[in-house]
Length: 402
Image 1 (cartoon, rainbow, N blue to C red):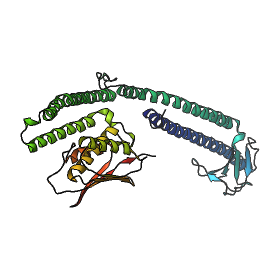
Image 2 (cartoon, rainbow, N blue to C red):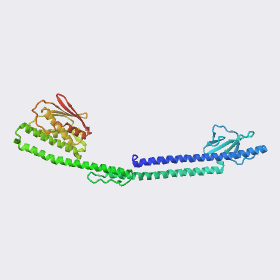
Image 3 (cartoon, one colour):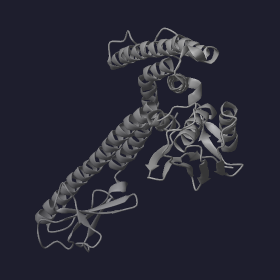
Image 4 (cartoon, rainbow, N blue to C red):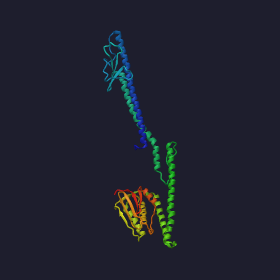
């Protein structure tokens, strides 16, 4: 049982409450025993003093004490003596298990100051106190044990419906009808179970709409995009103007890449992150550029450790790098790009070219929003810096240990 669980908290709370109540009544009972002992002692001393004083007044002599528990004594030193709560004229000296009482005579002229009484010597009083003390502490110990067991049982009973509810929620899957235990209860747990059911059912509807949307985008948009690309490739004469044809090809490829990014972000398998080597991803992207534009002279200077790894998804990283490198090819006018990874910063930098004679490219163009989406999904920070001479994209990925 976890100490942070409801069952443990209920057990600790109820157990502490019962223990405090038990200790309170135990202390109250002990106080009752002490007060009862003081009352009995005061009564016995009063009877003994009255008998002695009556005999002294009648015969001018002190008669024998009625019990060995009584002793004639002078007024004791008050250093270790304290007045009792029930009789200010009686003082007591308690040490260990012994209790000695003293009460002064009310008349003067006696050869002694008063009478001392040894409480333990009085058989009825001491026997009562000992027996009651044994009974009291035995009953207290039994009550504490019973309270612990009953509190454990009560806490288990109270926490069991919550545990069953938690297990039922964990067992739910997105492709099965929602069935959560406890919805028929008429208490707060039933309300919570019904709330879980309504919320989970709404989530299932949302997941189904998301799956339908992803399916539609994947099948309904890819088909016309592929048809457009094939038409432009097989029948380039269908568009007489080269500029218009190039624009159509560029727009088609941009749309295709946008769909790829949106689908990648929607797929659950792309949200699983692990250490990914950086160099293989960049090499695949650069080789893809060379494959599309074999005659293009584009220098990519890499300042990255061969063993450098970051926490992310390989497919999302490929789309991200493809966009940034293609932008460098497009905006840099083919002059090249510098890519570095140092001190936790992954920097893509390329010079800006003021020319309309830019090479055709495959990529997302100015899709900063999609780039930011990819970075945020992988929990990376991203910043865009542009001057008159250069354009920089600074990424702060989660670095993996080498």
